[in-house]
Length: 123
Image (cartoon, rainbow, N blue to C red; front, side, top):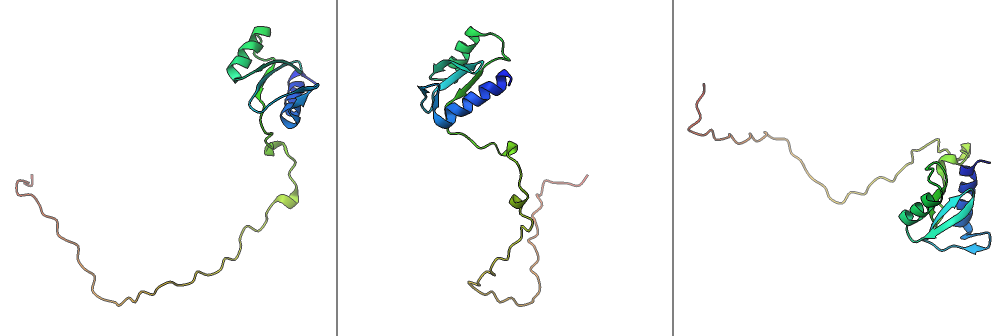
């Protein structure tokens, strides 16, 4: 297991159980991990990142996250064939009329003729 996977596993445990290695975490805390170990707990992400970079300046190492409710990652979840809706159409009830309009055929009304300004001249 590489460092990124180890950090991800610890972050998921912290966000899910709000606990890791006997230490309790609270919603909104910002945690920095390095090699799967909690190295910093701060009140904001910037402070946690600054403290992590003070310990290890390599931007490819470590992880910073906020303790929050876990969000289901739909893209990595396996897709079951039964979850696919094959027939998206449904029969909706016909709307009930609320009023009637009676139309009678007739001659259409002509549009108003625009007024042409007097100072306009054709070239």
